[in-house]
Image 1 (tube, rainbow, N blue to C red):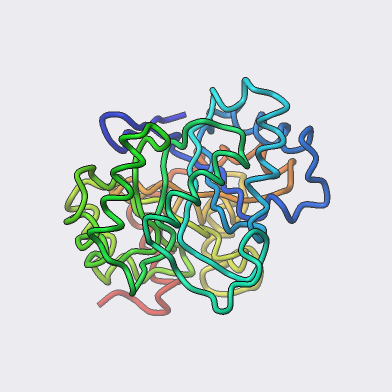
Image 2 (image 1 turned 90 degrees about the vertical axis):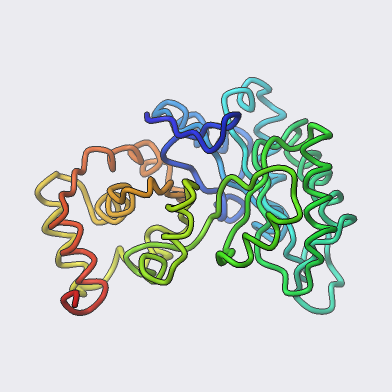
Length: 296
């Protein structure tokens, strides 16, 4: 599988396995989680996306059980996790109101907890999960730089940031932010024209795309988008999911889709998306169907 350089010290697989729902599976045993990881590795998918908040602050623990049971796994993986969202759940039970915390104390504590829960000594990429309207960018930037200097974290990125949020945080950091994980799909096409994608493409940042299947909505129904996806899927012998992801892969910005499923039979075929080749007119057929009209 294609390897993608996010910086001179960080490479990811072009497809990323997302672990948002890992703790929601009916089988969260270390053996079953290892089977999912191995199915990805067998396809060249080496990058795994986590967050402290996933599963009500339990998904990292579920992953950690597998990594602790087989210490060789983590050596074959690039692990991404996130911090800054607090809700009344798990280790943050008693939180009065959902909020973001980008203070030095919280960021450092969150990283230490993630390392402990996953049983690892190093996080390849730490993302600030949501832009914090109460952020002191000097404090946050310094805290993130400290984590890189300590060796606990290899690189820093963000998630769901608009260009101005990125620039504010970057202005207070020595290390370069390497990616922004945003929602972008045939269901959420705004980033193609609202400046988000253009900003990162201009600066050479590789974006990560969460929810490339629109939270599963793109897999059902008989919309105009579904009709085009079905026709293109039939031409290649795949299904809607592969076409939806291929739509992102085809873009010249080099988007990295984050694909999450607990279904092992689907995990073993994730890389089938690489069979799909969309030309410019295929891409615009999908885009216009999502837009609901012909482009101007």
